Length: 131
Image (cartoon, rainbow, N blue to C red):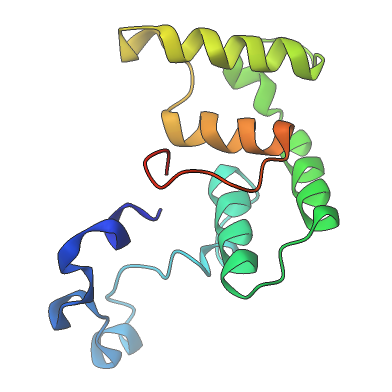
């Protein structure tokens, strides 16, 4: 989600939304407010966390609630597990995915794996390169 904001040209005039086209619903969605429009899945959780971080409202209880939301859509099935397993097994599987050379064999994209890892580890600091 933040990929386009890392680019040098992200602050050029052509990168901003036009209110004219936005009123016609012809614009890319605001990724920080995307959670207001999407069903509860990975995009919802990521967008909500970005919104709260941008507005300095991110707290441990919010991350815990987001983790509970992720449990609702069975994220562990995307990792290849049939049932919810302990955190160590999930982190082990994520580590295994990171070491795979062929991306087609991985069950989750890097951004989704990073989100799952963040929710499990509760790490608040992530490098810009990881994002």
